[in-house]
Amino acid sequence: LYPQSEVCETLNKREEENPPTPFPTIGAANLPDFEDVVVKFSGSNIPVDVSVVAFQKQLLDVLKIILLDLADEYNTLKIIGLEYRSVDSRDDDLIYDIQVSRQDGITFGSIIRDSIRENISFI
Image 1 (cartoon, rainbow, N blue to C red):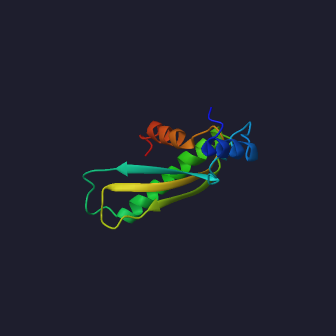
Image 2: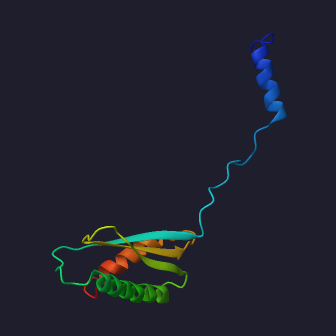
């Protein structure tokens, strides 16, 4: 529009040096190879004489059974880890971290939580 303008000329030179690309130049974020699934069990009125450690281990064993059943049902589900997340004080909440191999298009977190809800009577 303004042939004498130095600003327009600079912009035109910049476009000639770096022409636009036909595809996005920003790559996808590097995602870890695993998906973290956090499962929290909230309890109430747990008797004081109940061994919390034994209860945690028993619940861990039940979660293993549920996850192994899910792995049989979903061939793409690869369980990397399952562990209890320790809490500083005696709390009625038990939190477990589950790591599964990430698969494109599949969110295992919701599948795992749904399976736990379906098996709540087993727990």
